[in-house]
Image 1 (cartoon, rainbow, N blue to C red):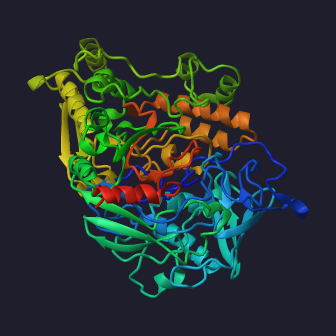
Image 2 (image 1 turned 90 degrees about the horizontal axis):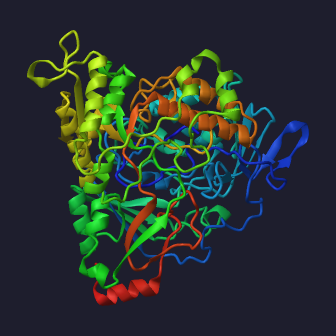
Image 3 (image 1 turned 90 degrees about the vertical axis):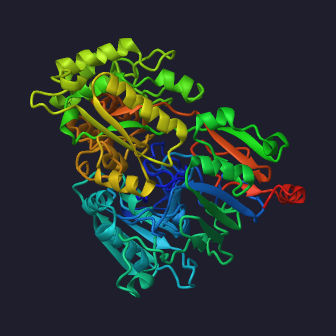
Length: 634
């Protein structure tokens, strides 16, 4: 699916569950009702036809249907915000603003690429997926009491085409040739016959729906502009209050039209969700200890290893929890801006990678808590291993000359190993220096590497001031190693707003990024992240990767018609992405690290692909009362 991810956020949240995971499972007889002339009508959708939940399902398997409602979930964000519009091309959006908008359907977190109706009670599509018709629930209303209509759906779709992020607008503009309201509660999308059938229904079904009347009441209201006025939505939460750069509070709607839908049973359990803003991670951690907010998703290994030893934790007021994360890790790392000429030679990129000492960083900065990451599908059956063989080899060979010979004859690229005892692993630095000499970047005046034109091998590496200390130190020490081999490298600490602007404009040589996504299935999101068509401007492709090899594999993956072939194509994609060498992996955390005041509870059978603290957790009122009696809560 094409991503509608808003501007950079500070919270570790998956804003659109299943953005890049499209269905790849076998047909189930309970999934859908086949109508005349090859038309399928169903309560949900998956590409291969399987839905784990029948039409009369009472609730999702991983929720607690009896979870009590009430209380407050309070979280932290660092940095600043100047907008309450999550889809603006400018400014820095406030956290969790997307909670206010429903979609036609939503993905479940226990099945890859399975979608179930929310605003839509059903959908129908022809065998060739040339169109899809959604039947809206007549009871669906916006928070101003007006009904959600097919016209609102069409208007929202067009807003994203005309005013949305360019990468989304261009991709969806190619896919969708028509959007029309057949009546008040029926909307039809028609698809371009020349594009893949993947991601079509998933994309239009997952577009947030806004009130057309609200936008048209004031012509200055635009999707692409920052604003502190919230567009009217139909979701379970509504903005209650905000204080710029200090806090945002959302309140659960008592009149939420969809609270009793099977998809929502046991979800959206908090009366309020409050986000407190802090200047940096240090201030945020101190705020947690002081009770300014009550649930923290920890991302800093140093804090997790050394700082969780304070009275409230020792007294049992705060719980420290490690919860398994079944998702493949985000392919985060140091990303090369491939638009910069100094990085056009892959051997230069490999040389610069050798200056990064993950083992030292893990032991000295991350307390040995990170695991090395090689793959974009790490720890899954889609991870490429060794030499391509069998069906994967045949698949790659069938792609023809676009596949380099060394991709077929060499093992999948893995990260180099370094000496954990010292930052500047001399063996690797010597290898790096030799590669740079061979690539035409010898050491010149001032012990700085220059090319034949006298230009220095420049690496400008900006990072935001609210980055966790361990990550910031990892960047700084990496730059020190680059300088040690003659690279004109600088690490530049900037405020979050400036960093957001520079990220959007690709004003960097290298950047630490979590923008790329792992994948369990194929779809248009792969093209948006890794494809050439939007490479020049996609926010989700910070390297600007434009590879004919990657394009060919993604396109071929769209044509697979069964699970095994799809998995094989995606394994080849993982191999190709690693071959292109545009990101230096920095490792990953295998579990969710969560600390919270001992009043929160969560289902025993949390889904594998989501921690679900926003919508699956709840407050135990007796535990909450006990904490208040102790004076542990503000």
